[in-house]
Image 1 (tube, one colour):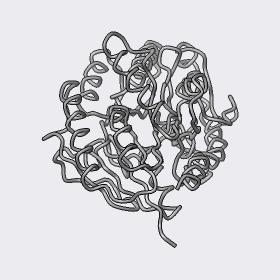
Image 2: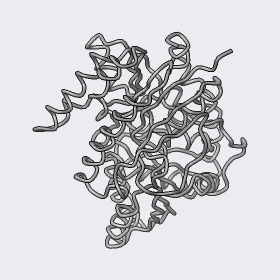
Image 3: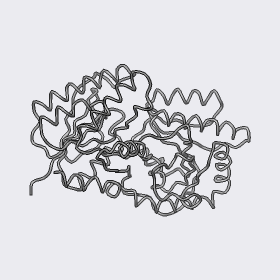
Image 4: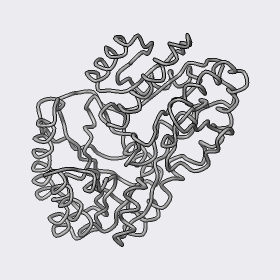
Length: 375
């Protein structure tokens, strides 16, 4: 039986400090279980380290001499990557069953590839954010949205915002939520009430959530309550800036920057409380927060704002998580949970049972069926 092939056009450098994002890793793991061959195209920033294995080949395209350090470098690297990618595909693209595109700035390539290969083209992880942009950015985002909507065979999304947009505009789509790897947690309560926040500092909503956390911890200082808090996420430059801000405000938090998957696993195993201080001013436009799912996978007792578990089914306040309405209640709840840790640590055990229904092979079931139907 001939193995089916999918070509994925990625925007995340496989060998950059950021590595492949969790969603792409999840897709690749499912493809491996389906026995598909993968050709993964991604930018190269001249860094030699790699981030795991994939079921197929990796094609690196050199587009910038270093990881982009500002918006201008990022924009230029995207343009050069798109040009290099188009040239490479037009010259050397061999038979493939499906192409899946993972980055909105690559949208102009879709009609050209569609004409070239005459095979299904899927789009995944597009935000459809034009209504939220301003000025020229809004116009260009709208153009990219329209190219994607009119030329893709199917649009795949984990975002409830994007899902609403696609339904409203009658666009062919499937909903494929984010997930996690198979839970590794042993169903025993955590003995340590160390607090943990995880999130890339590239995203505005994560930085806004951290500022909520700063305010919460500053108020707890006034009440002479000092929880142990770790904040994990890069880039390192932003982590250092926020660490300096926390020090000026006498807030006791420790920023780790981006860390390896092995070190992250160790911190998750040692931590007892997951913090998701996401409120109305810090909603996600993307898919489910994978870090929220990892918290429950590792049996952490999670305290979250109303937006913390957005799109995650099965969360019940007081049973497998604690949901609070505002930062004031959040700080009272944090005191209560830590002060009564012997009672509240069992919430994490209950949450870990839910994690089994959010593994990638389950959340991406519709995507798997779509691939087999289109190939």
